[in-house]
Image (cartoon, rainbow, N blue to C red; front, side, top):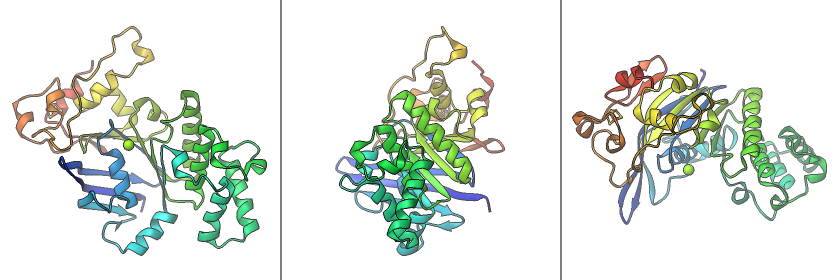
Length: 328
Ligand code: SF4
Ligand code: MG
C-alpha cells in the first residue's frame, strides 16, 4: 500500500489553569510513500502538536490525545503496545526539529551521536559505525566530514547543525520524516540550501515527508500537497499548484494575498485582520468567522465540515464554491 500515514479526526487537549485548550480539534490528513505534504499554519494552529501526537510525545500531562486515529501503514499507533510503537518510531518514523542545538547532545561529538544510532539499532562495530557516520555526513554535504566527525555540535554553524539533524533522521532509513520548521532558525540563503537538500534526499530515498511550516514561500517548490491548518483544524487540503492558483478557503486566500509575489509587484499586500483565537475559547461555528471577509450568519452557528472540492481537495468552508470562483 502506498498510504504511509493516515490521521483521522485527531483530538488533543492541554489541560491548563486557564481551562482546556483544544490544540488539535478533529484533524485529518494523510501522506503517501514518496510524497511531500506541507502542513501550513500560524503558531498555535495545532500543526506541531499533531506531529507530536504522531511521535507519541504528548502522552503526558498537561497534553492528552482524546480521540482519533493515527495509522502508520494501516496500524493505529495510538492503540498499539508501547514497545512496538517505540520501535516503529525509532526506525520507521523520524522527526527533525527547528532547534538542532537543543536536540543534539552538547557533550558528545556529532560523529559519536551518529555512530551510536548504528551501534544500537544495527549492532555495528565501533569502526564500522564510525565509517557510516562519516558517510552520512558526506551525504548531507558537510565539507571535510572525515576531519569534522569528532567535532561537537557548537563547533558547527546553524545550517551545518541542521544538516546533522537531517543525517540523524536519515540514519536508519525511515519511511517517513516529519520536519517541524526545519529551516525557520536559519538565514534565508541557508534556509533554501537546507530545504533543497531535504527535498533531494526525500526523492532519493523515496520517503514520505511531512513539512511543517508557517511560511508559504518555503514549501512552494518542494511540496506535492498542502494541508492548511487554523485553530486546531485542517481548513483546506489541495495539490500545491491548485492551491496557489485557486484557493477554496478564505483563510488560504488571505495567506496567499499576504505573501509578496513577483507577478503582483506594485500591488498592496493584504493582511488578514485580527488574530487567531485563543484555543481555550475557539469561536462557535466556523472558527475563522471573526476574521473572514466572506462570513454570513450560518458561519457564526454551524461548523463547516470538510467539503470535497475535487479529487484530493477539501475545504472546510460553507462558501467554498464562491471562494473558488472569486479570482482576485
Ligand atoms: Fe468564512 Fe464562513 Fe467560510 Fe468560515 S465558513 S471561512 S466564516 S465563509
Ligand atoms: Mg511549532
